[in-house]
Length: 136
Image (cartoon, rainbow, N blue to C red):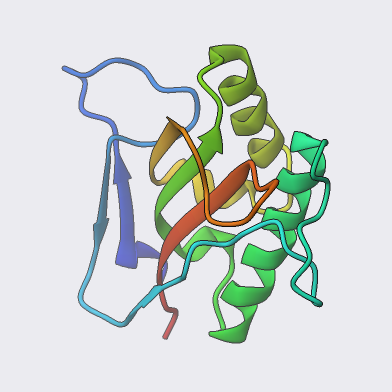
């Protein structure tokens, strides 16, 4: 059922770099993923000094979490990206890296990118919060 998710950019709002201002989901089941962190399977932070390595690990973890509920990036209806930075160039680089990843279709829906002071794990620089409309 392809029309269960509609993504809309009203003409009266600014153009976006890939996301949509509004995402509408027809009635169905939703999955709310916990914040996906740059942790490997053992629970260790990956790439403590490498922001892009952390983005890659977060994307891989998010894909695994989505797959666990029978969903894919195209089923994501809301994303929030948290980055420990106040540098707009770093924030933009994180956005571009996610948009170039296998998780890219997730960022065509309603999305928010935030610079924050700190995240939960020592050395953690990025976290991703996703909501997906489950297929079928």
